[in-house]
Each structure stands twice: as structure tokens, then as C-alpha cells.
Image (cartoon, rainbow, N blue to C red; front, side, top):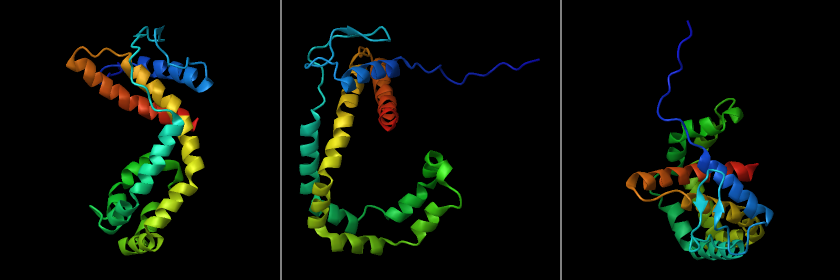
Length: 196
């Protein structure tokens, strides 16, 4: 006699993820109209109609703001390294299981913890002091092309996430709670899609 499969909780609804991929295809292929995607039926059957919907900032503005904000935070970065809220090495060791779950294939002899234990907070702080805020800013400037490339990849996918969420109902507390859950799922899906 076969045992019945036990279902724990409701079945997952992947309709928002299908909507995200359809929208991402439009944005990343350049087929989306200049004002964005509005007045369309999505694969889920939802209708995306809000012409005043939230627009994700364009990739060049995103990049310049990110670089300028990072550069202006240089002194805070150095202060943060010298005065951490908690020991970063201890925090990283505490996160060992999360790391193992995501990178299980790379773990052979617990190199993660062994490597961290060879380091020290004072060593990290000494490197940060030697680099200084100017070195941090130069590092950001040196990575400007990379930041621009990544933001150019992220912007259309972020717009697809925003559109897919806005197509969900939001009349009740339950609707809004689902929007939050779906937003998290879609950001994870964005990461998967970007990685290919």
C-alpha cells in the first residue's frame, strides 16, 4: 500500500515569477516601450495598467549615485571597520551553516573556518587604516565600469520585479503581505536569472 504524500502548507504559486520573467524578457531585449510596460495582460492573467507606476532609476543615474554615495561614505567605512558593531570574524563563523548550505559543493575540509581563524580583527583594521578613506574612494572609482555594467544588468530586471509586484492586488492586509513575500521571492529569482 502506497503512502499518501503529505503536503505541508499551501502549494507554491509561481505565477508572479512567470510574470517577472515575461517582463524581464521585454526589458532586457529592448522591446519595452520607452515609458515602460503598461496596459498589458501578464502570463498570470493579471493586468498591469498603472501609468503612474514606480519607475526604477535608469542604469547610468543608478551607477553615478551609487559611486558618489560610496565615495562620500569613505570616512564612515574606515570608522566602521575600526569600530564594528560585532566582531566580523565571529559573525562570519556564526554564519557557517548558511555558507555551507549555499556553497556545499566547495566545502571539502572546512577551509572556511580554518581560513578565518588564521585572521584577526586587528589585522583587518590595520589593512583598512593603511588603505585609508582615499584608498577606499580610489577603489570605488577603479570599479566604476564594473558597477555600471552590473547596474545595467540589474536595472531592467529590477523594473520587471517592480512591475510584477505592482500587478498583484493590494486591497487587503493579506494582499499586501503576499506582495512582501513575492517581492523577496522575485529578488531571489532576479539573482538566479542574472547569474544565468
